[in-house]
Amino acid sequence: MRRVVLLLALAGLTALALPGSTAALPPTPQPSCSPSPCSAWHNTNVTVSWPAPPAGVSVAGGCGQVTVSQDTSGTPVGCTWRENATGETVSSGVVVRRDTTPPSVSSSPERGPDKGEWYNRPVSVSFTGGDALSGVASCTSGSYSGPDTGAGSVGGSCTDYAGNTRSSSFAIKYDATAPSVEARPDRKPNAQGWYNRRVSVAFVGSDATSGVESCAPAVTYSGPDADKTAVSGTCVDKAANASAPIAYELRYDTRPPALAQVKAEITSRGIVLRWKASADSRTFGVERRPGLKGAKPTTVYTGTALTFTDRRLQKGVKYRYTVTAYDEAGNAAARGLAVKSDLTTKAAARRPATRGAARPALIGPKVNARVKAPPVLRWSSVRNATYYNVQLFRSGKKILTTWPASTSFKLRQSWRYDGRRQRLAPGRYRWYVWPGFGKRSANRYGKLIGSRVFVVAR
Image (cartoon, rainbow, N blue to C red):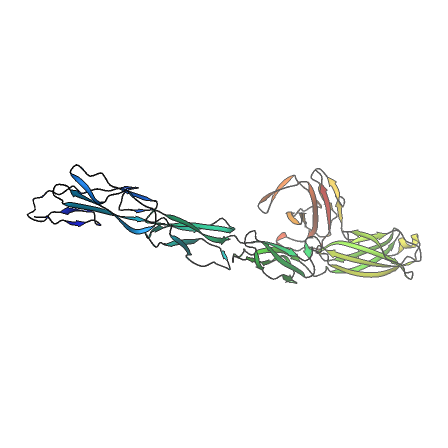
């Protein structure tokens, strides 16, 4: 009886004999694939080979070497052997799958740019793919957190089941750094770091990556008067990074010093001018103009004293004097008076003085004196003064205040003031002296005796 054999070639199953069959079946041919295994997805050419049949068995169909060189979702390759004695056959087969095309890749950031095209904080990017044959096995993801650049990128890839990989990148413009800001006043201080009229301060930014988007409008300061105040502004770049406010500190004073009791006294030495001024007065100037028509004024004195003696006079000429007081901010107050030099020297000596006497003054060191050792500060006494207040400044900053009972004070090479160690280093110094009355706790002070500058040489 002929044996019926059920062959499942495509499934690669061995033929089975029907119940009751006694005829011997030939062995099942076993394929070999290069590369192996035969069941995998391949991304190169696949060659299927079959072994030669054993003795007594012959090839009934297929069994030749086959190379699959085209992409395919499944190409069957088979082989059938026949038992020569019985005529029974056995078949075997494989399905070859080939995919050499990488998957497509697309990127997707977790969010859009923070401003315009720019990111200013870390961002994650995921990658997804598509594949028509073997399908996508896996994709990577990435993130970007710097450095700042207009040409950054996050790389990613996807791989299909055949082992094909395609890489891609997501372009990023990244700037996480706020712009730098500079305050620019529209002019320099009027004097000694002080402004005495309105000043406009603009804020200008710079940004090396995304560029500056905008800055705060210019600020105009016109008061109130203050020894120390500030205006501030910020800038924002195109990535929406805002700078911290930057302050421009300034000193502002629009009030002129007070000048009063400008008087003249004709003496044997010449015309002596005296005046009184408020404590904020720093320097004084005296202009003289003869009473001739069209005559121009001449500056005959500049300094810190509250008195001036004009010796270069012509007898019988009427002079017009203008005394001007200047404070540290350059504000000025002026007063004038006319004096006629119509007395002889002897008569002038007998003429009683006008109201008021010469004010006390500083004695030493001389104006702009250059010293190498700590100098002794000396001044004339003030009636009824029980002590004096001496203040020393360097570069506009107070570095010493003391209250000697005598009319002199010896500076030292170093001392402590306001909790810090100070030194009499080379540089330019200005000192002031005021008289004090009664107990120090009463804080009763008279008018400024004077102010002078000395220089400590190297």
